[in-house]
Length: 177
Image 1 (tube, rainbow, N blue to C red):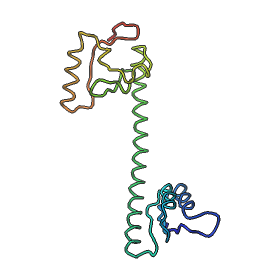
Image 2 (image 1 turned 30 degrees about the vertical axis):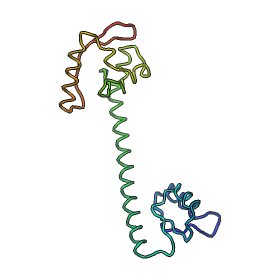
Image 3 (image 1 turned 90 degrees about the vertical axis):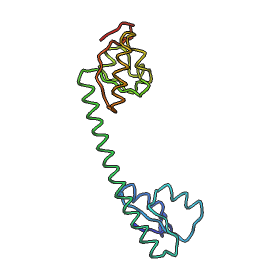
Image 4 (image 1 turned 180 degrees about the vertical axis):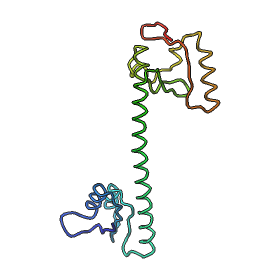
């Protein structure tokens, strides 16, 4: 939609552009003869796909329309991929939460960023008590060397996962396999 900011009626082109974009998901290009900072700041909020000053030159209009259509298509594909990714993440989380194995995710410095329900139940900690703690602080002292070795090997292979079997200290201070 190519729309002048000044419209006859109850709303201006900026308000109309906001409604068109949010309800119909159609790219809007605004045009005006006036270029004051207040109007530009108000127009930015509606996220127009372009802003043309009058008199509009044919070349500028063509380029702006092509860019608006391209950005709109890319934006729609991005939103679709984000939705697919969220759905996949939800399915993976559901799988992990219901499989019964301890699953956790760590940063390279061993900071825990995710601990499955099984992990929480076995260790007796809540997610809040585990997140942002270092997993190395829970590993039995006799298992630290082999655990670090396996983790370093996985990092050097650029592996996203590895399998460990070691003892961890639970909330009561007892080590469990």
